[in-house]
Image (cartoon, helix red, strand yellow):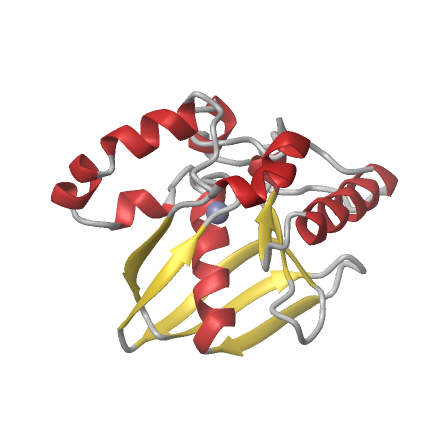
Amino acid sequence: MKRRILHYGEEPLRQESKPVTTIDDDLRALVKDMFETMYQAHGVGLAAPQVGVNLRLFLIDTGNAPMVFINPEIVKTSGKEICEEGCLSFPGLREKVERPARVIARATDLEGKEFEVQADGLLARAIQHELDHLDGVLFIDRISKARRIQLKRDLERIAAGESLEPDDDADQADEEA
Ligand SMILES: [Zn+2]
């Protein structure tokens, strides 16, 4: 079942999420719903708070394989890279964000096994972006204050439930509303 993606301005996006304590049918159902929601929105990542569930859990699929990260942590970062980023909770907004270029992350998968992943490129970026969501941090917190002021009007529109997508993408906006 597809879930509604919360947009900027909705409270759960700003809350600190709690660790997952049990991997049960409810959690598996949530993950299934989140994958459906993410693919339908053409996203490469989705964090539980984005569907209103404040648990430390996110999904990523950069095109190689679907990955589930439960109680994730970043154990090491290196390098620096500026890349354009978007977020399903900010429809239509894309901004350049500086982040470490490479990360080593640790998490538990849906079978309860701990795993470690070394990532660069899009995967490294997605892991950091999604992990931020679990701490109530949004990508606009990582751009300059001056740029954030320039975006004030756009952010107000998103907070009012609008999409910044051009009209030809209105279908999707309608679906999400
Ligand atoms: Zn996001």
